[in-house]
Image 1 (cartoon, rainbow, N blue to C red):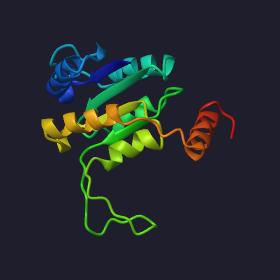
Image 2: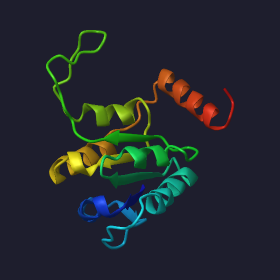
Image 3: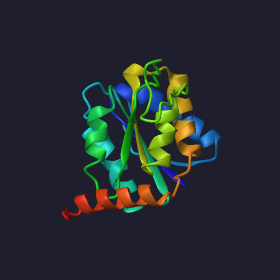
Length: 169
């Protein structure tokens, strides 16, 4: 699997650390920029490159994009066909958080797992202003190691997303 990385100046330092982490884990990594720290650069110039590459090969590639909050980067990536970008900016677990079955999670990375298990997310946007380096790397590791569930209901829902992308409601 090939991993495309992209960030503007805000996530540049963390992107470089993530690149090293991924290479140590034997992933094939392509850096889509920024290639140097420039406080005046613009995230669309780099995020769009990574999103387009994942869009062209959504089965065999993934993208990891970084920004201050990760929000705008996620919005941009999700404009590309075949891209399902999820956002992670910290795994906050509260004692009041329960689902409809009454189950609550104690795992701050469960949301990252669910983006893969249920949504087959192929791009992960990281909000660097809200995470420590170790948390971001742990989230990425969990995300990359979690497979898609292939449950029929999730396949059906992903197909509906693709139909909307293609203008078929």
